[in-house]
Image 1: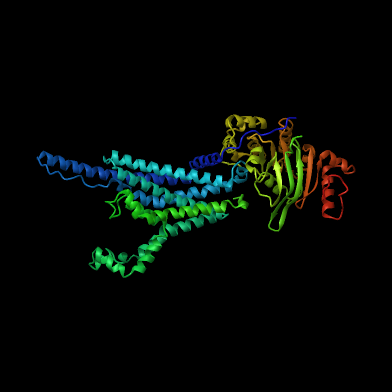
Image 2: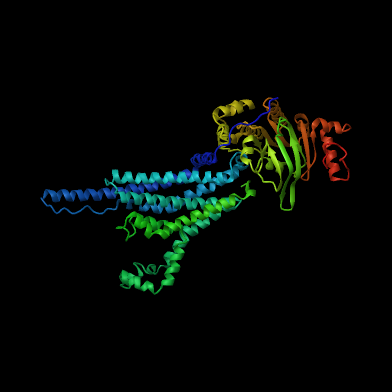
Length: 334
Length: 257
């Protein structure tokens, strides 16, 4: 009898990561819940971007008509083109992504582990030349790529819609701002993907893991910002507290100096929310938030560094936490 | 002389205070069909988990096809195939999709061709595009063996391969094990409760009791040592009785108590 000996060399470490990542992507497209959330997000985003681009296009048509009338009249003092800030068409996309995007990311994070738990396939996978860190890396990579491609598609659609429907070409700075907004959106989605992944790994029962994820999401995405808004002195009266007192912006700033500790606490509560960080930096990048219109994309990043850190820190913490939980030897049953 | 297929030296695994595998020293030659017998909780599955590198030993060493299970665990995994007691696959995928995924993890080239080969070996090429979710336990068990064969393993670990199967299913699995060993030369290490199955298939046996190996020898020697005992079942029960009671078997060659 011939004695069998395996001569296939062990694959490189990155090989298994890529195989698992590819499976994550193909599995996502078999997940009905994910597909529904993705279609909802894309539909909302495309409608918002489309309508915004139509508005930009109408303003450009009006401007061009004015220019034509003035030129026909022989006037030479043609007014400059209006500052339309075409990338502001993504404003509603930010609002939708803050909610539907987070939900979509949580679906991916939760099912990523839950499907292995339900199928009981982890033991079989780990009997292959695959190690726990590679398995988790593959899952994170696959889902991160999926979310990245989804967001890149939205970004590309925005550029095309602005160009084709709005008939406006983006400047280099505007394109960079839009690309950075997409990057911030990816970090934001990654936060909630990792939140669901972490709880799925940490809590053995799927329904408890899901419940915890949703509770943390509600607190981080809605309750903290709501507390911040409620505590905002200017929100105490309709139309603005300071405006009601007849104060201008300077007066408002001076008055707030008297309540510095209060403002610090209020701001601190808001900064516990990744959603708030995401909105603040994205609105600044898109030029929706006043005061950043004249800055370059790099200056906006510097001015909003706190918010950038506020998006990166949860990603790092949740990723480290997920690895720490999963790499414990005895959790091979998941 | 060929290296042992499996060699353990005082292999021990503890879970807190509980010693699941206690100083296991064992040698299995290439080409053998080794049956690991023992009651529930005897430490058989923990031993397989250690040898397949799913668990780390507390103390002791083990080598599979010459590779250390701790220091060279990637190489060990490349040399083995593993079929758990309850084969769990992705129900939403077809047999071929499941096999493609597990084969890809092992870096198997020309995977489609290999999938056809293993399904032909099983005698069920028609299963290729069927969804695993609709399969019976016996069918899953065979797909589990197919996935374990994808990477041309030198050693196949089977944890209770015929457990819960009807007689027909048990016979099909038994025939497959014999074929894999006789025709392909694959060393088989299997945990089993089925003493009749062990008597029919194996070339050597080991008996575990409370984490300790109480006997390991060729089937032929075991039967010779107990001439008055009619079946392997009786031998097994005798050994267990003596191990758990006051009887001594240490005068018998191969008995390690």
